[in-house]
Length: 293
Ligand SMILES: Nc1ncnc2c1ncn2[C@@H]1O[C@H](COP(=O)(O)OP(=O)(O)O)[C@@H](O)[C@H]1O
Ligand SMILES: Cc1cn([C@H]2C[C@H](O)[C@@H](COP(=O)(O)O)O2)c(=O)[nH]c1=O
Ligand SMILES: [Zn+2]
Image (cartoon, rainbow, N blue to C red; front, side, top):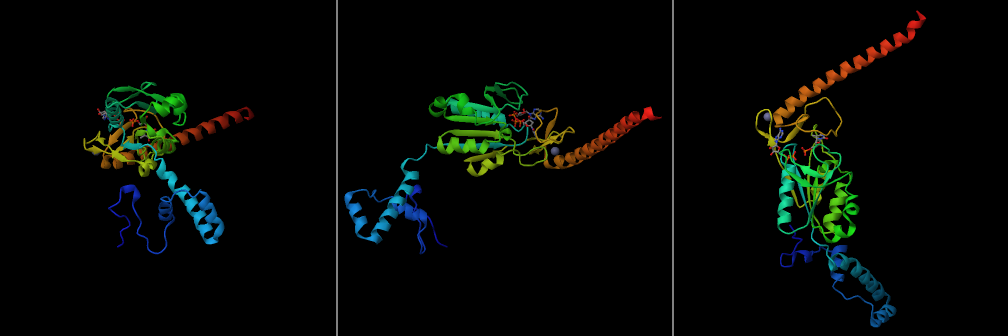
């Protein structure tokens, strides 16, 4: 097996041990070590020999292309993702990490979705009642402007995002904040909905995240580790704001048995409501016909 990375070089300047054909990346890297060929001597060289001319201009292009990513590296941002079922401590974990960042002197801001109006519009609130002031927004793209572009660029180090499953522009915002703007982003959200389907774009963050933590709660039925959220009511829409009156954390076996019972109950309710609707339609039709009899 061929080793592709030489351990003696610093991590960013690994050399590729090329088989026969150099890759564009390695050629670009080597070319980037040449000085830019803008001197009169270089121009003269360009005019004298067509072979040189093509390799020189090629080298210049590669120099430009290769030097860009290395000459001004972006400031080091980070993305940390915290997922788990409801009541697993996601907001508590986000709050702890934000407070610890603030204690170490970093400037922080927290955003939550304005869809979640359960407790208080201006704070994130844990199920145990702990609070922290936040921006309640419909989307993440509006944050920079609301916060102030200058303040965002120069006076903000860490961004916390709660209820991340409700933000459609989550991935785009986090990628830019960490890759380009050097922010540390701490994201808390549900990985799965009540049917254990991927929720929003939280899981799309995994490939661009530095760390991913999946928390667990306690099963409300048996007390074992709970990794899933069961919806106790008849509603079927994916997004349904609520707390312990609508949802409960459950272990795998109580998810499977509970979900089976709930689906049957939902189907019975659907059938009886369509029966009710049919009866109602029948009654309406009869009453509209009654003047004829
Ligand atoms: N079934 C439950 N109903 C209400 N509160 C619960 C329940 N299970 C756990 N909790 C509490 O919720 C806390 C976690 O709250 P929070 O951090 O807001 O969770 P998450 O953001 O994951 O929903 C736990 O420490 C626990 O005290
Ligand atoms: C499972 C599930 C949850 N929701 C909603 C319910 C709550 O308003 C939030 C989750 O809050 P938490 O901080 O994780 O306790 O999401 C939903 O809309 N759809 C679902 O399937
Ligand atoms: Zn259980």
